[in-house]
Image (cartoon, rainbow, N blue to C red; front, top):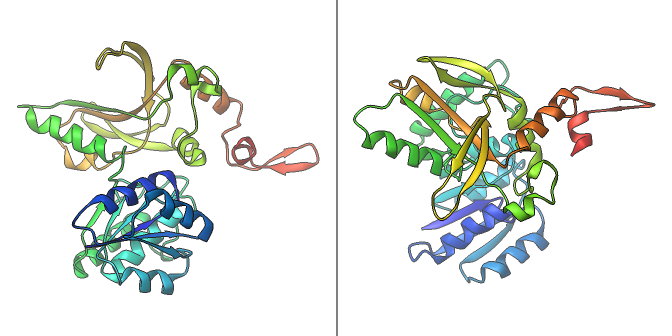
Length: 302
């Protein structure tokens, strides 16, 4: 099998390429990125003769599709929805079986802060999702979406838990990565940036759908904060979580649930800090006047 990794120079993409290179069934691992120096650094880090570098801009439709036709499966670890959907569309057109780690439910793309996602004029996002789905079926493409850490492992583990129970009415997926307690004390918001932080802040600001009292309802992200104690695996810590987007397929595939939400875990104090930033307008994306200049608060803060 020949595997192609887009975003192969990032931390997640490089780890994916490393795992693929260790697999005996994989004979070739292509890593895709825009900068040759970054590709070379990743290739040396992996240290496998299977790795082949491809310097490419995903917005180049012709070159992207030509490259995809030389591989059996493609994986994307791209950081935003604009590039992620370009990968999806190119893969489906090229007949490449694909895995995407960013977006969990392409049939119903999230309508808020679409991060430059481009879709055909005159088509709604839901129609675009169905169009991609039907085209994948027509082209014989297997497309696994949202298969990363969260979404991904969260879907699999929560789904398995539901299957093992006789009846399930309430499901909450607590997800997220947090730094050590010692490291967290040295960082604002008790957090250390390990993911694309503009995308993280987007997920704190948008509206999303959850299940409440047996009905699908729209709520604000970063709400319904909950304190809980984690006392497993030789740990005993007080933590907090709040609603974030990430697993919308459960709204449609688990109709028996009366309550469902994904919640991101952080150290105490993080969500209160986020709320303060929101109330100050520092996470807004509407342009404002600041002295003699116009700025957009969130990119300015970043």
